[in-house]
Length: 125
Length: 244
Image (cartoon, rainbow over all chains, first blue to last red; front, side, top):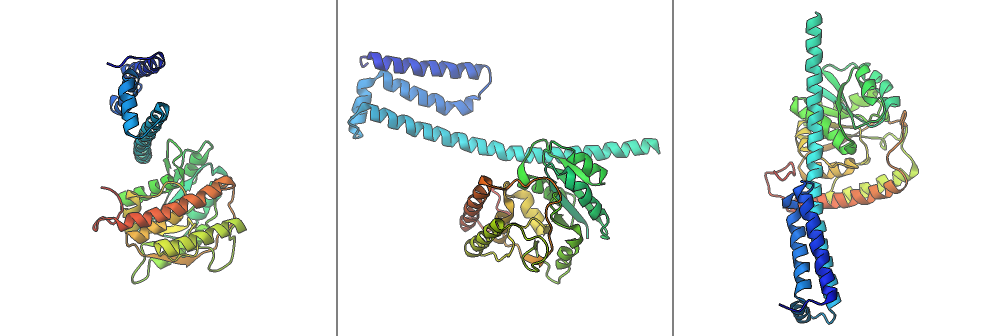
């Protein structure tokens, strides 16, 4: 295992804290496991990069990054962009379903109102 | 012919009462009216009921596209022969409805009839900015979607059974009029135009103005291009454009 420097340790702890916050949200059923898996994977990757800085530096150098910080920023930005896109797809699906549900609900409500009005008329007749 | 008038309305309590009275005065057999209350915060639904219309009360604001589609879905589900969209702000005089219906009595009736205010050049023809916007949309629809219409933003329309089937499955949600024309063209529907006279809104305020007008133009332009590109990659036998 690489030796964890002080700066990297703070980074790893930050990832761990975020992961714990997510676990808490999952346990309280505020977020779904299906929706959180990619975010947890992202935290795991960033956490591993902090725990194994030498390996990360080696990978960064192989990919042509001269500065480790540039590699970290690039990785984080790319991962967040993917997560955002995924969230956008989910949100759009939910939005479309909400529209259909709202329309169906309105049609059912109108039908119920008419049935209720018919029954009231029959009773009074 | 069973006709359902679909009136999308959002906070239109001022204009709606008069509009429904005009619709009641029409001498058309088998005519029903449904007001789609798009999550209004005023007394729109009460005014609609008092005016003798059926009311679809949406529990949230879906926008004009979602509201219109609700009415079209109802028409399709209940087996109406056609549906006519008349805006709840009173811009579309119900007395002009017969012009749209006449188009359906042709030997080969179109699937979609659009009422245009720019043919007769009579009545209210909108502000200069909106007319410029309308010109741009005409150009976009003509050259990208190959649709020839003189009034692409007109919401005074008649939908035949094929159009009801198409738009029940898929309908644009915000600023839907120009995009739906492209959609109809791509699905192989026949669109016709008839001259109608429109008037200024009879109450309430327009939702399009200032920044939203610019957003409208941009969004509709992109949407028309997307509709065309989507059509290029669509499998045959799926004319409604849905992914089902």
